[in-house]
Image (cartoon, rainbow, N blue to C red):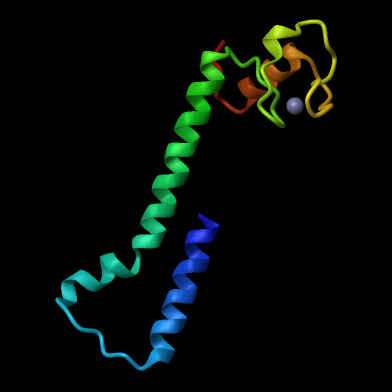
Length: 103
Ligand SMILES: [Zn+2]
């Protein structure tokens, strides 16, 4: 999202300073001008949808920091991948607090 806004700003800055005339159908310009922002919003939505699906498939048993699957090691009190404090139950609680896991 932030990258899309930066790219959009740079493109607008370049276009304004290039001295080029805007040609083509005028109704097409606003959608084209904001296209990078639309792409950023779509990318963010798809990423969130994939994260939700992944967390729900693992029943919330993923490390909230690095998404390591904690189901394989139920007795740990911190993530073996990134040393984030909390075992599977704490991970499930934090996903529940974020609204990604029900119950
Ligand atoms: Zn981790």
